[in-house]
Length: 391
Image (cartoon, rainbow, N blue to C red; front, side):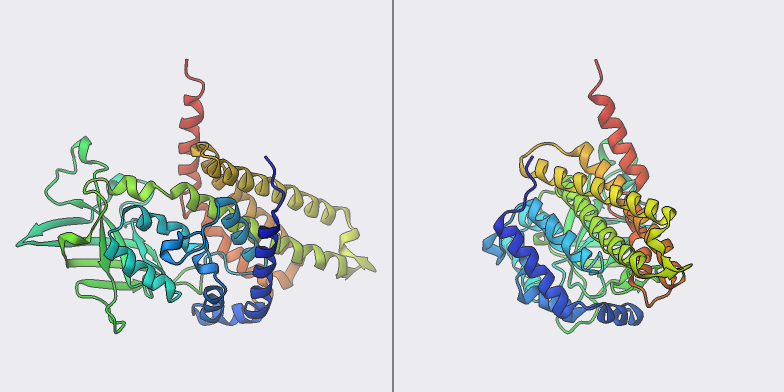
């Protein structure tokens, strides 16, 4: 495996640095974080410079690149202090490019071209987080129409997304039967009308969170939301497998974002250690601080190896069920340890909102929960590893 950057990748990362320097100052993100508003000026700059369509097929206005390049860009964004959740939503759009109808694709990518989310994925529910087979939202057919009912939880960007890709079970199926436990379908649902008002039958309730303050996360309720048969996405009854098509890449994206955030905190704290004078000398001269810095460096390099290796495997059609799960488990934990240690080195100033490490610290914690909890990653990897050693 050769992870040396190509000339094209190097130029792309230099362009990332330039956009971040011009439009993504820490003061700007600090103001957006405090006001709980989306950093639209920055994401518009990403759109204008082609980053929002990176990785999409050309027929949808995109620039095709391999997974390795996508991860490098996500890492570099976060290394520059960009909030971990601002860049990378395009990875989930494979659900639409693979299974959407031409009309659904047009509606989705028209939104992407405006700098908006193509859609939000309506998967998690109040009673179905890690246990996806417990999804309770249903659809039923009446008088030539389809009606959706149910509740979705932790819907990121549902306040400013026009569409939802909703996973639901057929109300006519007996959910207690084993053959129906993971039998779901995907539906293309309008959340907002053209004038910005919430669509009929939809109720959206924002959630207050510890971090991710620039992005909205909501509870969503569906009460007899009327659909057409043409709103079915892909094959009826195959919605669960369709939703899984890109989970491994999305998990790896979380790893790349975690790596970048850890690098950002590490560099801030290490620079501070060379400048902060206590007892007549820089604190970086103290052996305990040197131990912190060395351990942070080791964890970052281990994270980098996991991200680059797994991306290389995906690009070379090598199965990554184990590696993507272990990478997600390790990077989610390691990044938080690095950022937490960086905050410790910064001391009291690191705990204030004037220091971006405090924002990184708040935002990073959820990556041990979102995109698959630590416990589920252990479950996935633990079972798969044992299968390799069965006689």
